[in-house]
Length: 276
Image (cartoon, rainbow, N blue to C red; front, side, top):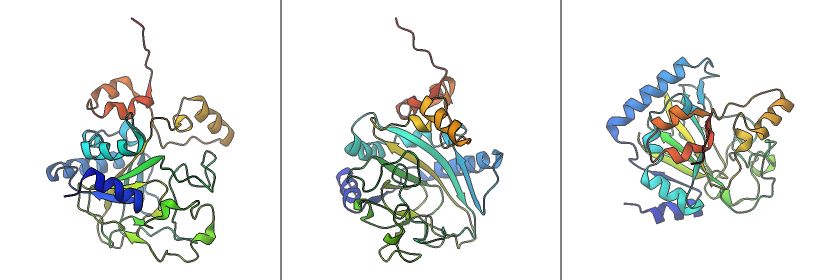
């Protein structure tokens, strides 16, 4: 059985790991059905076979007890120390036939803030330091056939990624890429710098997951949170309002498990702190 040190070392060296059996088997089905119901109720229709529920925790808290799992938190705290936060949550459903991203490099990219197309980004060449860990919570199996996440091991050590230099990947695939596989209830966890993309769903069933990105306590999330000045200024300049984060009410926050609350304390709205 892998230890926390094993997982940490693998992320340090290869950039990713899979933590098995985080969500008990009997709970996976309940969470999966809840995510499907939440996605169905959203006004946004699937785009080319991909349904995304952004700001998921504001609409669906079914996965909340597991986001603070002891193993997942221990791995994050090994990189970031205490007071880790979750920067965003998204429910994702990939329908049969959903393709791998096209274009030079096959859609390989690094997550925010390393994607070089973001206004708020760490400019390349960026330093060799993890800032966030991305997690994909498998609610169905992840396989090569149904579009398990494509990863390029070790690419988190590069100073750039294909969004900033298309010459890094000259073909539609990378010669070193692999696909992450795992059973429902397992969690794919990776350094957000690693080059990755979705695989093509060539199966006849949906591939369903929840994405949660963990951030160091000192990492600035203000430009992601509606209502804060950094976000509002950028939204006014662009004329669009990103919905990756949806603030939560204090009432919803109080309903979260005690261990999970600190992960979302930074996105509560309408809270007044009174001195004693």
